Length: 396
Image (tube, rainbow, N blue to C red; front, side, top):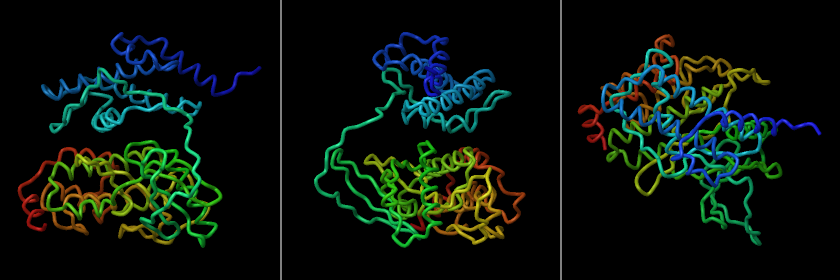
């Protein structure tokens, strides 16, 4: 009997990590995790080693050596590719959110040559030594048989779909459903399904997670978020400190940068399409949503779109079919302005944050940032200014 593709993929992954040693301290954490325990131990130990070294460098010379930078970048690459290979073969493995966020904090400044400079405002990463950071999630779950419909509450709507919230009776957790309107055209239904497929393929802490598409009712389930970015800042603008605004800005930028790294342009960045999960401790998590206008940079659309779409439109964009990275960066600048000031428009700042916004939205496209990674590099070095803080408090 011929061996199937998934079996070969899993065998190759297992062989790759059998050749790598791991310490007893990490092996013991994964003794009961089955086939992938050794792989997880190797990856966990590698992440701990690099995070510990970076923490040490941050407290001393702030120079992260060339070889260490190269090794860490390779580990990040292996982690991403090998977990994806497992997923393709039917094994769903997950990295702890704290460590995923740690990688995203480090990756933008890691350099493959000449060593890497640890940012001055870099905060030490919490090292996890006595808990698993990698786990294999179950591929199935038994749910209760519901005898009566679960109530839905409408919480939002767009041009061709409405969003509803409901509480799952099995878990007591709130989820959301995005349902196409009954009069949605065939073309928009195709776009709606494409939105789901793209979001399902993307896996990142700052991308809204979607779960299952229902072909019969043209709807899909997704994680629930508490507020839009607009509402989150508007309600708290007088009390938000600079460090919180900066964290929100960076999470937003990391999400956009990830989308671009996967070959897509969002094309509908707005204060309504950036969602926020708000936790009781005051912590927040940015979630990018609404991928209805997403564009694959490597392909040509069947329909040539010239109609100007999207909430925030670059004045320099003549028609929608020519939309590119520089036009997306204009919308990025617009949102950064709102995050740091709490006001619509592109005015209200007179500090280093203002210079970042101005470079994102420059009328001369050649003067704009060429990538979101470049925006991230500058935002990571922003520090609170007395002038900006005073202006925001006075406006509140």
